Image (tube, rainbow, N blue to C red):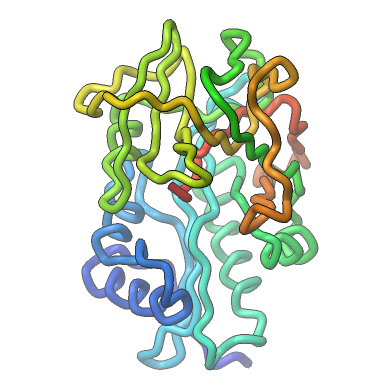
Length: 285
């Protein structure tokens, strides 16, 4: 029998400190893993506190896996789901299958609590584990487009098989990231939220749409921003008639694979061409 004890992720002070220490040990170059960020992510989300599992060996935190509650419209119905987020195993405890145990325990609890799905973005290293060991569908690599001028948003949307749902409260929380900063740039009838981060001389677009809730308090973008990068999927974007080009895989740090797991027992899958999923909907910027 395993000596590891599996416990739900705790979001109190001691719990956050333990997880922060583990994440910083496993990912020493990731400066965004701070106690402030984890308190914001795990405990302040209006959709609910984090759902996840830790593996303990005595007083030592050996492994961690967490998901964040989200709201989405799936096949025309509003439901609660989870965004797969942080996972880490201490080097002294790797190779023992802890990640699979933590994920299975997390999903079983989530299904019991009425969550309908888990969605996430996996890198090249983790995609195999999610799809082969945990039963996730590999929906599609996310588009990564770089170009000039307005994004080619053609229609109002609304017919997507999957689309995240944001309220004024959840959007205000998402845009209050302790580390990253965002600005608002209205363009005709579209609201464009820009991240301060730039690459190849282009600014990242967090989201663009006509149906976002009001964004009070978000500072306006006062600079001209001709070059932009969009990461995500959106059936309303027609890239064929735009000044945007695909960023080749060899220039991307990761393929950013969109993955999906149905928790209802109905075996639902997503069609990439009918999914709306922007950078706003996961945590990279």
